[in-house]
Picture 1 (cartoon, rainbow, N blue to C red):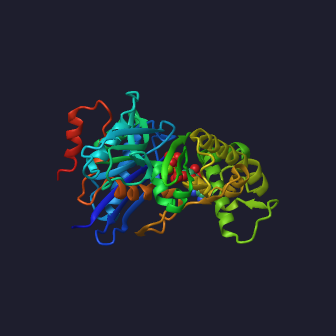
Picture 2 (cartoon, protein in one colour):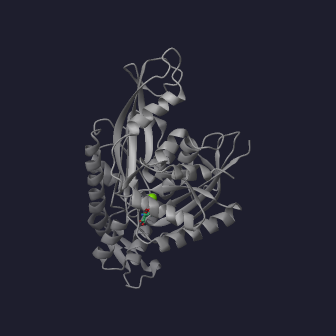
Picture 3 (cartoon, rainbow, N blue to C red):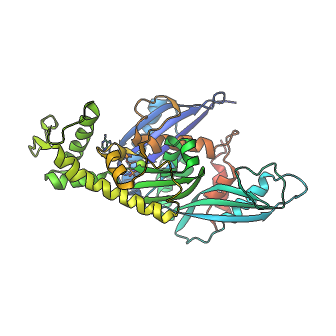
Length: 421
Ligand SMILES: Nc1ncnc2c1ncn2[C@@H]1O[C@H](COP(=O)(O)OP(=O)(O)OP(=O)(O)O)[C@@H](O)[C@H]1O
Ligand SMILES: [Mg+2]
């Protein structure tokens, strides 16, 4: 069978990143052959606020990536995030169709469908239904019931929903550009796929992707995704605080923030906080030539990080799993590179914290092995693992996920049409 080309677009509040990878059928390895990232326009806190702007930005990004990859992009996985994301755990029960024989795919699909039949408002759409565990005749903790025998099959699922309007706007942008949607993937889930280890998920861990305008959260307990959410605060708030604190423009504040990260990553020895950070190389229009490190890190940045962590802590409390995450937090997204991220986090959260970078890819990876591309890389990794099956068709469960309750048969037909060459 031929190698498979997969593409994705990560539509963020700060950047739009397009990525193309080839999955080799022999090694199952994902080799990146095209990648481009540019400033985002028309997106705020994960929500599309200007369709024309976002469409132009996506078009540019896709064209540049196509040139680099030498491939036309026609089908893409798309990231979705922002405070319109919500999640719920739901239970489904079915009788096994042939109790004399083994549990088959169809039994599992019916159980998932039963769990998926939650009542949601018509302003929302289900984007993900993930089985957490199965129970066969009362025996819990089963990861894959196919091949077992029993009478009653139960499934615990994690369901993620998103604003229907935002998804419609994303689809409009794609169809303007002649691109087919291979599936919406929650940005936090994509990042989790790119940076978390199986051991962390098994022990219990929280993925926190701090982007420009939002922070996506995915909490795993005993290997299963158990809570997802997205809060409307991100690393742009740190830039705002620097702008206000130093009385400079947002552009200058962003430059100062990145310069500070660069300064700390370049120095091996521990910095004296009472030293000054020289800003002359930045040629800022405000003529600020230096700032004391302490005022910047402890006075401006740390309080905002502390606030972000407190909001994450509230989400963990809401999930009801705060005692089940011994692996602590894995922070990723561009905001993860903020100076003081780990120190402030350990103090505020009192749990293990590490910075997560994407892995498990080869090819054009140098630039991509950076926390800000966790979602971008994760879209391809998650898509190839959970959406595209060996023969190139979507998994049945995924098809059900993508079709919201009450949708017409035409949408189902449209959905299948995209796979017909
Ligand atoms: N080296 C760095 N040090 C500090 N902050 C950084 C660094 N690099 C990027 N950032 C910050 O990360 C943010 C962008 O992160 P990212 O690219 O993950 O956002 P996004 O995916 O576009 O947005 P979102 O996911 O919120 O929609 C910006 O606020 C930027 O200032
Ligand atoms: Mg992002």
